[in-house]
Length: 362
Image (cartoon, rainbow, N blue to C red; front, side, top):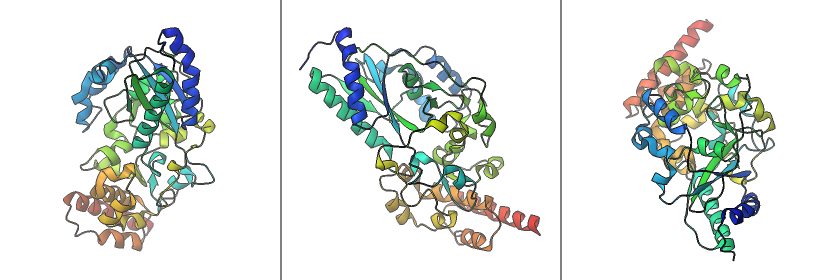
């Protein structure tokens, strides 16, 4: 066991840590500093403009997100990890093909399989244990979208990629990956950040269905389909409902548009393969699930946390956007006695849309 924790000794340890990370399934590991430059100013401006919508926790945590030492006192450096999640092409339907089939439900690729939060944290803990075997006990704490952490800012400082114009982390292998962090009291020297490689491309901005990317690197969550279908618990704005199309949980359009994702690597772990047929499921079939079936099928899934009411609300909007069909009208009408006023409101809208579609086709 090597107890030498000088900067030189820790730098020599980096290749080993990356090797252990690959053995745990991580596609890349990097080392970030605890100072995030102008990230705090950018965050506070974003909050001041109200772009966080109903995500009150964003404002509540405020600048803490940009100050790792306030979150975990004693933090000296941060290990950042990428974990690929895009299912293999031979194991899942093509995302764009699913989007182009309006009778099908589109679920963001990150959520068609197992919930990554626990998996990511567990593997970061295993990495910490392996490091401790080499150098002795040290302080560490893993995170995976589970605390006020500026994941993209940290990962970009750790040379895992750069912030794309859609505001996600982007690398030469695309953006179909999860991010996780291991806060440590080990003073690793940070990796040299990578510059942006977006150039003049703005495909993500041009193809955003709701124009939520209001400027390069700036997203108004209030218009973002991922926010509307996952984070937003209330009424989906009337003018945005037609733009949701068949997207019932999240949205991947900005990633599908990005040229760098032509080089994306499929997930190495089987955990992210589609479950419940979510890569090809019909809207009507998913809409028929009872609350008990919803909870049972989505045990261990990120989707479970939005609850059955929001799930039905999202599908009702998608059914309203679907081509006119008597069977679609029937499944919508079958829910009209649902106790949720929120759902009934969206059902009425969906039925009116179906009627409009019928009138236009006559």
